[in-house]
Length: 192
Image (cartoon, rainbow, N blue to C red; front, side, top):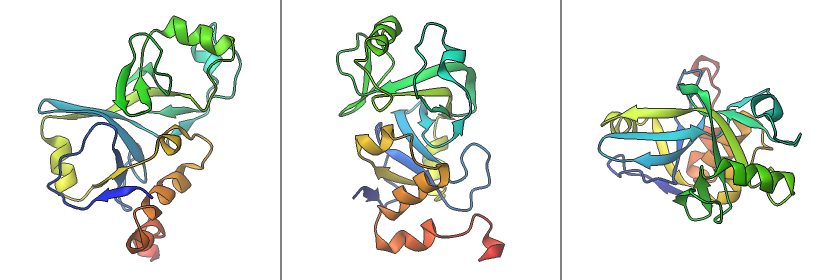
């Protein structure tokens, strides 16, 4: 079970997941889950966990072996850059996001570990671009109830096997039975 932060006044923390409200009409954020990687007075950023794109990793990164990595569109900011999350604490230069999840680090080290089979697609996720908010923007969106803020398990954050909308629905349902109506709401409220 994930923990739901019910107060709209609660400050989100890095490592928490933002779940969009069910009727948000936005190509990047409608029915999406965003892992918050940084949140401070100046800005916030994170990666959309369930907005997969059809592209092979070895097409983006020469020298990477052909492996089953599903890539997410992390957000609309700097979408010409590739970012990555992983669960490997020994990668030099990696930044701890939450217990068990790290961002970045020495990419040559990662490539060699992947080639040796020491890191699998369950331990490494790639994102094209990221989601970003300016000072006070995310707090205002949370206060207006555009986002639910939850704690999710590392395994769920790293899972790329679930369908995009099912990923969002599962996280909403894990908030408890009082949220089933939200998870099952149609994306178009006129269909309700």
